[in-house]
Image (cartoon, rainbow, N blue to C red; front, side):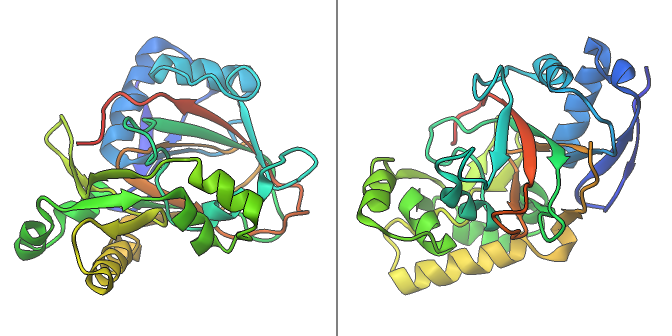
Amino acid sequence: MAIEWRDLTPEIASQVSGSAEELLVPEAAARLRRLLVARGVLIFRELGLSDEQQVRLAGLMGNVRAEGERGIFKITLDTDLNAKAEYLRGSFLWHMDGTHDDVPVFASLLTGRTLSHEGGQTLFANSYAAYEALSPEMKARLEGLRVTHSFETSMIRAGVEPSEANVAYWRSIPDKTHSLVWGHASGRKSLVIGCHASHVVGMDRAESDALLAELLDWVTQPRFTYRHEWTPGDLLIWDNTGVLHRAEPYPFDSGREMHRTTLLGEEAFA
């Protein structure tokens, strides 16, 4: 089939049309993957995939990470269903998934099952496009810089209580240091930043904080971002290797539940 889509902004996000039956074939999934890499985020309005269909589509686009129930991880702030729901406060801040690994996840598929009546919109920022738009002087300044990423830093910034148990858990996850500019095998470059970016290695802390804040503001300006207002059954897919994301805050007792399937990473940070 010929995948049909329309770009929602010049720099990021395309809305794709088609039924589940049309999308769940290898040829269509391969086209979706190419479009995903080119546009960063794909939106399928009210597609209404079942969990099984979502995992099947993911498997046609890459290698599914074993998590949750047969590839479906349920994202909820309900503490009866998620013992670590408090840590999801970190999802309210701009971040990439997998910066504490050597190989970050490639992409995620997310379906809205139960929505909050307040908040819960999801925002995405194209780090590829943002890097490409930097001045030559800024690109030269960033060349060779390395940044340490800290789970503890992201939790503190998110306002999670630094109890003794929490801090012990945070510190059980080792810090990771990556190049600030990720030179991908494709030849493209993106910025590896977010709430987890603690500091630039070897740089004065005040200068480091100022630079990382400046870059995060640059990447997340309206020019490079897309904000999704959910309706039940929407499916979103984003390329985690070059797209930051965050959720707008919503009440812990809202009942909001999203079903996520994750594609394993294919390229190490470099």
